Structures are given as C-alpha cells and as structure tokens.
Length: 227
Ligand code: GAR
Image (cartoon, rainbow, N blue to C red; front, side, top):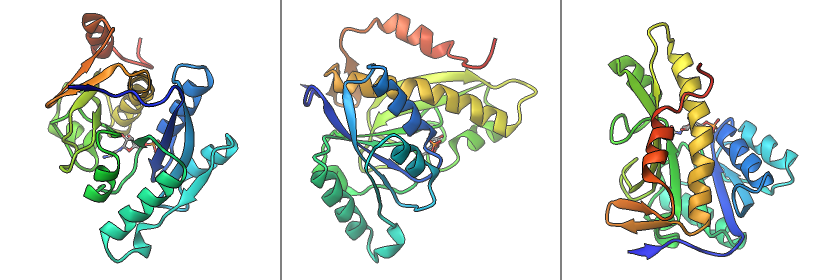
C-alpha cells in the first residue's frame, strides 16, 4: 500500500476529445484553490474539440495529437507520453478522452492515470454509459472516478456518486444530471490525489482523513440541479 503524493503543485495533463466541461470544472477548482495543481497541458485527439478553446481561454498550453495520424495505437500512445513528459506531467487526467489508453502510457505513468466514467461501475462500462443505464431502466444512475488499468473502465475506484432517474426524464435529462455530478466529484477526486490522501490497496482505494459516512451520504444524495 503506498501513498500517491507527488509535488506540492502537481502538474496535471488533461486529455480530452470533446466539449471539455469536466476540464472546465477542474480549471475552476484550481482557480479557487480547491486543487493544489496546475494544468501543464491539455491534449486532444480531435482538433475541433471545444475543450481546446476552454484551455486557451485560460492560458493553458494545448496540443492536438490525432489518433488517425498513427498507424498503430502504440505509436499514438508514445506521442502522448512524449508530450506529457515534455510538459513534466505527474498526473494524467482523462476528461472525456474517447480513446482507449494502452500499456505504453500506463507503464509511463503507473497509478498516475485517472478517468471519469458516466456510470456507476462496474455497471455500464464502455461508450454511452448514461444511455446504457437509461435504456436498462435503472432508478439510480451516476458516475465514477477511477484509476486506469489495462482493462476498459476497470481500475480501482476512487469515488462514485449516484443521481436518481425520474419518471419524466429523457435520456438527455439524465445525461445532463450525471454531468453536473461529474463536475463535483472529478475535481474532488483530483484534489484528494494531489494532496496525497489516496492509497491504493489492491482493488481498493483508501482515502485518508475523510469522513467515509459523510462522503457516502453526500455522494448518494448528490442531486445537483434537483430540489
Ligand atoms: C463525460 O460525460 C465523461 O464522463 C464521458 O464523456 C463526457 C465528456 O464530457 N467519458 C466517457 O464516456 C469515457 N468513457 P466533457 O467533454 O463535457 O467533459
């Protein structure tokens, strides 16, 4: 069991593919001092990703690395690693990055890659977790922040939060509710990481100095946007 504490001002690399609303929530949390980190680089595999605009508007360096430019996934991963290292990144944050990361990146950043998934894992892994949950008819949906390992949406879970599925909900209502929840737990999980409060013990992630019961209660009644 070992502690995940890097430097006092952890350098984060954020990987995105789209809107970057989670990136925005991280930027805001850093601005108000809730996360002891700086974003060293935002990398997108899609040059049209709106998250790139969010980053540049906030003075954060950006890089586009298009997966289509690489014949092999490993070569794409090697370029990601090269840029992340060049920017002296210590923690890699997947914020809506719609590519599977492979062993090249995971071996370069062992236990230093975290992801947000829009479902309560291990239910509904893969793409469109929210849609899968909606179609299945669950009464509680939610999101998960977890360490990334070599299997998809599988690594040790840091934090999860649930939101209700209401009878009048459309799929997009549910997606929006889950996203608002993501914006709460992702910055929180990153803050825990950066302050050295996370310990990986096999599949379990132990959180130091946090009231587990309170955290569970907050997660379970987390209904941002609902009365
Ligand atoms: C988020 O809902 C995130 O959980 C999901 O993509 C969205 C990105 O939104 N990620 C995955 O589905 C990864 N499997 P954003 O670009 O607005 O942060």
